[in-house]
Length: 150
Image 1 (cartoon, rainbow, N blue to C red):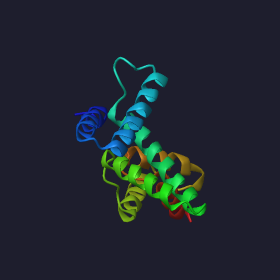
Image 2: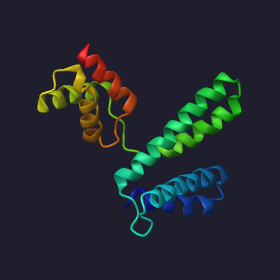
Image 3: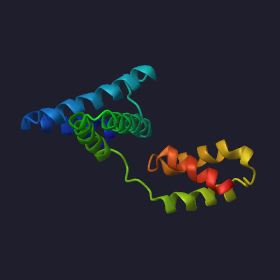
């Protein structure tokens, strides 16, 4: 079952259960995936699971930023709403790797690609991101790659 199909199945279940907050969140995710399909001109065939995961990661990042902004502004109720949406989004994302696993992967990819110069940092970040297949946050990867060259 693709990520999109999984979201659609959960949407139907939430609608039947009358869970309005969950329905709203899942409809938003479905809409984000539809926008990605239209942008990629793949409306008929759909986007791949890796592309869908990328879209969901962007949606999760939006929620994390919103949570921080709402908390900074003192609006705890809105922050809690965003956290609830983030939990739903994370259900569809692959389990996240630990920092030590990512660090090991950084070393492995650097050795595999024979990267020893900080000028090739971007190439190493790209290789690690591709190797994790969405199971690691890009900011963590970038930080660990910088630490690798420090």
